[in-house]
Image (cartoon, rainbow, N blue to C red; front, side, top):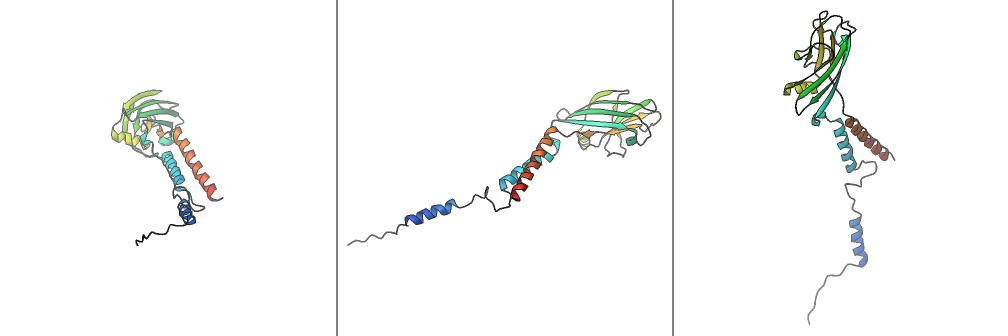
Length: 199
């Protein structure tokens, strides 16, 4: 007589239990302990904030503004001025339109100077035309571009009364509107995650 040995089949309840155990295994990408921010949400927040606060190095066009006065030049002049500038990092061309009025003396020469922070003097970089408004452009080299984007350039208007400069203004980079929107979105995500955490 031949005997055939077979393994006992699991009961239906045991098979259902195995499937149930597999179904209860949490997905680490979505389910976390209470009060802990989900990894996916963390990635969204980090990505939004990184984009919002990143340097504008990836942009092609940069906008600058400047406000000139005697205080920045260390003089008592009440003359004032303002200007807008645009820099294209593909063509490396800086365009400017600068106006001023009220100098105590006749203008002798004007420059873009740098690199320097406000209140510190630096060598001339570009000579500007006489008169107001000053409208022109120039091609920058790599060093000048880096200084400009670091906001280390200023415009200085020299006069017969103040030969070293009667009025001066730092060239300040204008933040892109997209940066504000992304920053607001990133901060909104942080607030949302914080509210969920405290529920």
